[in-house]
Structures are given as C-alpha cells and as structure tokens.
Amino acid sequence: MSPVRPSTDESRRTTSAKRARSSESDASRCVSINGVAVVQSGTATCISTLSTGAEPNVARATGDDSVAEAAVGSGNTATANGPGSIAVAGVGNNNTATANGKDSRSGAGPGDNNSSTANGRGSLAETGNGTGNTVTANGHCMIVVSGSYVTRTCHPSHGTEPPS
Image (cartoon, rainbow, N blue to C red; front, side, top):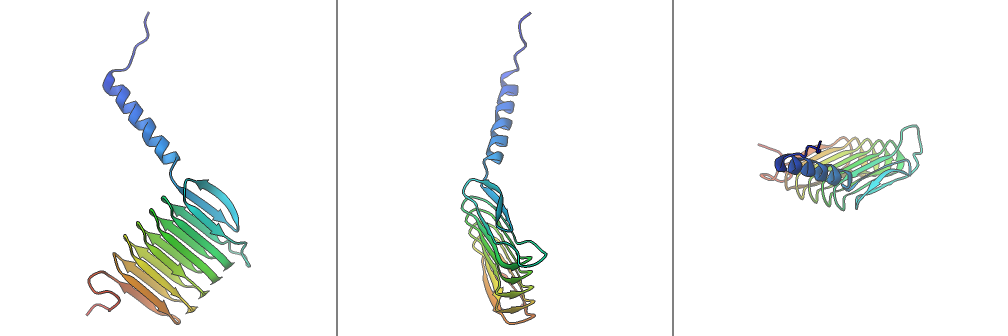
C-alpha cells in the first residue's frame, strides 16, 4: 500500500502555517524583571534594575528595535509595542510608560505615580518632575507635562490644546 500524500493545496496551507509559527517564534520581543532578562528574542531591548521596594521594575518590548526600560525605584513598568518604539519609566516609584505604535515614544519620571501613553505611529507622551501626572498622545502628536496631578491628552487635530 502506498502512502497517501496531501493535495498540493493542503501542502501549501501546511507550509504557510509552519512559516507563520516560525516568524512568530522569531519575533523581536523581550521581558526584563528586576534586572533579570526573562525573555530575549530578536532586536528588542529590555532594561530593568533591581527594585528598591516590594514591587518589581518590569520592562517589556515587542517589535524590531523596540526598547523598554524600567529602572531606579520600585514598581516602575515600561512597555514598548511596535517597531522602533521606546518606553522609559523610572527615577521614582510606580511610574508607567506605554508606547504603542511604530516609532512611538513614552516616558514617565522622575517622580512618583506618573503615567504616560503614546498611541500611534510617531506619537510622543512624556511626564514627570512631579507626582501623579497622566498624559496620553493619541495619534501623531506630542505632549510633555511636568508638575503634580496634571492630566492632559493630545490629538493630531488640536495638538496639546484642550478641546473646545
């Protein structure tokens, strides 16, 4: 009895599925917790330092040449999603920086309990030099805030000006 061979279409689907799984496993990504690289693949870079308190410093990056750094303090979290994205949280406690999108940038700190989120290609959100600040850049815009307990959002249509 001769072996049964899959049809050409079935063979192509199987090969495509294998390639997809292979590229997923080769993706650029990393995770660093309290100065220890937990995951490292491709060109993503994750940097963290040992926490000075009970909460860990955690850096996560996904995408070619993405960078995440969570350092100098306790409970700092940096997440970079997308090629060339950069997120830095640190020089304080409980700072969170999230960069979502190609070439997006997000920074939180120095200070405590600051949060910055950059959503979209080329977006920039930075906050620090204070406590409890929250900034969000939605789309291709830039926002930088310092002080304490300041909340701001920008959109490409009106930059850093609040909506009327």
